[in-house]
Image (tube, rainbow, N blue to C red; front, side, top):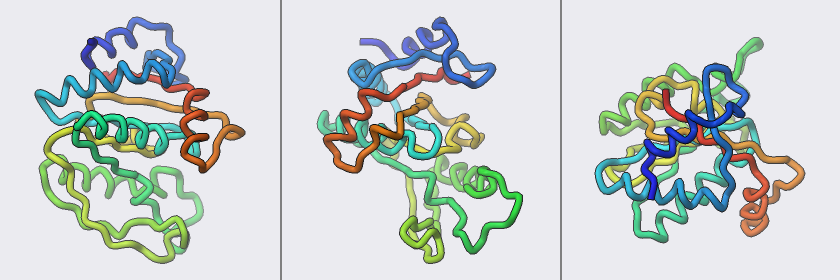
Length: 201
């Protein structure tokens, strides 16, 4: 069984495929993703494991996080998912010229995760996609002190506190033609996805 650090060494030595300068990466398939989950599971014996999952909109981020979350729970490992979409500004709060980091309130998100990683509870008026944020959902977020925390979102690799505290970074792209809401079809779609293991620098 390979550790997370061994997986990252493989990624560092692989040809650069992830289209982000200064980062080397390696593609893995969903079938090979089990090896990543084994490494994550092994690491939980010693510490809490933070996994970042990034990708563009509707690229399969939440599907991949949910897949890993379910697999680990089946193995008796505590697992939690945090969706970064909860920080998105409602349409009534958006201003012309805002970029994606503005829309995700990246400054607030960074400060909130600093608190979360210090075992504090964050109260969030979370974005509700059904109303496009016109109505907010009051939520209290606290990170488990053990097991695995999957943090997924478009800006996951752009938030300093996330990058500094993560153990593993995954980037996913998926053809929109194979996306479907049916869970079985989602798993089949993930098999056609490009899952990229990005080593932490």
